[in-house]
Image 1 (cartoon, rainbow over the protein chains, first blue to last red):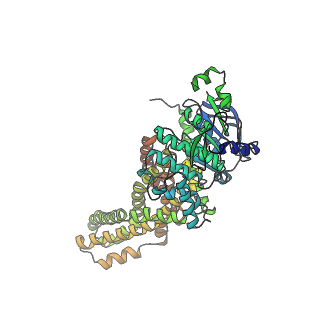
Image 2 (cartoon, rainbow over the protein chains, first blue to last red):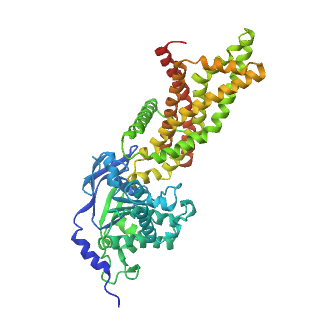
Image 3 (tube, one colour):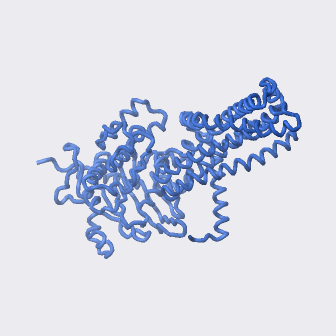
Length: 282
Length: 260
């Protein structure tokens, strides 16, 4: 029989430094043209943890990611990212901080006039200090991670939706960021491609221990992530053994009408008495 | 269609002017900040300058020719056909060269910038650039502004030159004027203030074309329809601004140097 899942060991290792939050929202509110989107929300993302954010359309899920990235400013409240209060930061300093965060956009947001190689290498080339050979090596390494090395010279318009999403993941991880933000990474994809994307996210979580916020409409994706681990030896995602279910650094956050109505792990979610949550997960 | 209250309308205008001023200011201030994107500037200079050359040459040539054609009939009545070179020269260098080149480049490039940046906004590419730690004003706007100013300056000189040639061809072929006489009168009539006026305007117009195009592009909202609207607005606004600024720049220069 195979050795006990590495995810359990990972869990033990992860809990050692899980105490320090990499993202902390404190009483954050934001409204767009008199429409309140988020109202006094507070939550923490701990180091090494993946937090899946759910809610109906327009509940402010993607806004949370944009706030965490500093792309929009809150009307009130405080957002700490890697120990920096980004609500008070100058734009110049914010760009520096962004280099430690990777983001996968809902529609990939690849630069359509650049090839896959140039898209993935974008951030490395912006640093102006990395040699061409090193850039090429890291681009290929990232593309190999998402199993798309063969597309290196193609343009985004030549790729399928799922491939574009995978290239976006490769672009986000090429600098080995401390935090990854995924905005509906499986939205609009077929089940097979969705599973491939989820496997990549699980691989990133279990192999590189990257802290992540994941926005999704698909609850089943998060359940797969909470019940599977990435086996390095076999090179694929496997289900956790019975009893170890949920034994991965994975939590859930559910939004309703701009407020957080649930923040906890899969066990707490499964035992929630809240009618709305029960209806949502059923 | 929902009606906007006059107060909201006024607020929107003030907000737009403020946003435009900030963007225009930052586009120049970025020149003094790292990183500077020289490769992007060269690429834009090629797109804007070399790409606009055919329309600028054609416009300049025919403008000079029609200027000579129209003025020749009037001058002939007073027996002053020899002044045609002076008229074409001053008209092209101080006014028609810079303004028509500016309008041509605005039609071609202001719209191009608005649609390109607008498409990047609606497909979240601008947000992606920010998320990758790159300032879009440095990477996208400053190279366009600097390249447009630089290239419009030289395009205007080319336009003036081919305009004079166009006027010379009409004068010599249609009115039998001596080519050398035309050319020397055209050349000798130009004063410092004419050349200064003719070279200052493309700098102002280049700045307007690029900043207006980029502003409408970066402010585009509402999908492909929004991009289309931004493109139209960019051409209209930059063309009107060029003509308005032309008047005020001319008035200012005249108040400094006096009338010829």
